[in-house]
Image (cartoon, rainbow, N blue to C red; front, side):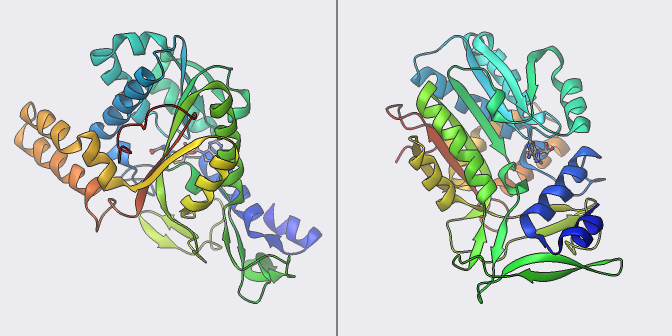
Length: 331
Ligand code: SAH
């Protein structure tokens, strides 16, 4: 399909290439875990989803406990984060659990089925996009979602990075200068976040975005991963995970421009420590066998340590103006 489109229309812009590849990639597999391509925080420890559930409960209380409230997740993967969040809420905040209407934003039929298995009757509806979420106050979480959205790259000489074709093989090429400054542009992520922020400003609520990223100025963070190892982004289109680091400065600016308040970004390690990951891990360890306890401790360190996921991953909150600063972002 990619080769045919290039043959017909010429070199393909990078964002179009990423969009086509990732749509196929996620639609055809469960990519998580040891046997898959990569591992995400909710698959590393149950404490991650539990703490995000507690974050939602606390923000909900600061909003004046609206009932009903939409509890949404973008790109829920296997549904593990939401399952852990709901289990925590059922136990410590039954009022929130009863008020929450769970809506999942997911395009992959394979992963929708996994989420259905995991969450069953708790899900009110699935959506392709936030545009179809019902109206009303919203709490939304998105872990490693924005990194899957397409980016463009403008080279230093002004030309735009593109994908061409030589025989059967896909190759890097360029398109004429679009007249924009050099750098990597996460336009899809910014547009997505702007729509979310506008809705939150209008109807109240908050969103928590966690992803690997930077605060502007990056030139090439596109990466392909297959079987937990780096791969060539052009070698097996739709069979490798393509991601780019999130430009949190651009995402924050897009959110503010849409009328929402922005908190952070803060490093994931700082955020999870403030939410009590060490304490929650200690509690889980008390009830666990020694081997499991060691795994839980190692998992918590992996999420928090600066040389693992603690620094490159960041948390950003988007909130309706006037709400209290959410947990983990209080100065
Ligand atoms: N949040 C999960 C999964 C991250 S992987 C975790 O932390 O484990 C990215 C997720 O986003 C997958 O569920 C994928 O199917 C979904 N996704 C990717 N692109 C999407 C898009 N454009 N719209 C909706 N969902 C998308």
